[in-house]
Amino acid sequence: MKIDKNISIKPYNTFGIDCLASYFCELSSLTDLQELIASDLFKKEKHLILGRGSNVLFTKDFEGIVIHNSIKGIVIDAEEEDYIHLRVNSGELWHDLVMYCVRHQWGGVENLSLIPGTVGAAPIQNIGAYGVEVKDVIEKVEVIDLHNGHTRVLSKEECKFGYRESVFKHEREKNFFISSVTLTLTKKNHRFTTSYGALNSTLNQMNHGVQTLQAISEAVIKIRTEKLPDHQAMGNAGSFFKNPEISESLFQKIKEQYPSIPFYPAANQQVKVPAGWLIEQCGWKGKRIGDAGVHAHQALVLINYGHASGEEIFSLSKKISVSVKEKFSITLTPEVNIF
Image (spheres, rainbow, N blue to C red):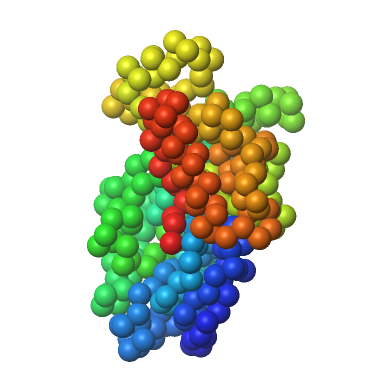
């Protein structure tokens, strides 16, 4: 396994931020990981595991080891009449996996088409879109403890999934390297979820309402392509903020002034409000400060128009948060991990 020094990580983050990693290595096998864990360098340097870098913002050079996960492989763990259990190594690209499942007519992840990032990142964030979250199909997650190299298997319950939340964001579990994720997918009698957002209307326009795995996937891809910019053309990390969940009383107070406010019911008598709508009401949609800006078609997406630094994008995000707090008494929480 090769470890390089002072490497630009611009190719490894979708914001396209040109920062340096003190050390950089690429993992192509679990043997590589065990070798790295045993090294003196790993024991004395802090580390960051990076997949596609689609949910990170670097505001400065990373003084430590950036570990790029390229461990790939998809195998059938078990198969029944109605279900298939698929074990996927963490370095696989998530969208490639979704396309693989749709081609094989395995249902459960079609709503999660075109989400960037790797399979290993999916449970950390509990990625979700159009009424579906990855927790809905996860059976178990295999991890390696970076303190000692020991392997452990976490059940779905042990992962403690929530809205863009999991056990892997907690302090102790941040030292887990996710090596594989096992999904339980349907082989027949698929349960389609098409009522969320613009999905149903897009399906009607494209396929006259016909619901198949491929039709749903194609509709999601169409929506995301039209709404979200290609990071290769404009650096971005997708949704920068989580959609906030607020109390019913605060929601009713806002609704008195904004009767058309979009919302979705959430757990514990909370109401989920689209962060993009809040940001747009504060006048940020399409705004640009230097090379940092807010996307003209989706206010939830912050953009690097070419040469913005991570600090400039982070500064913009803080200005947006302050204005939303002042106008709506709502605190926005970044979905993106900031370093």
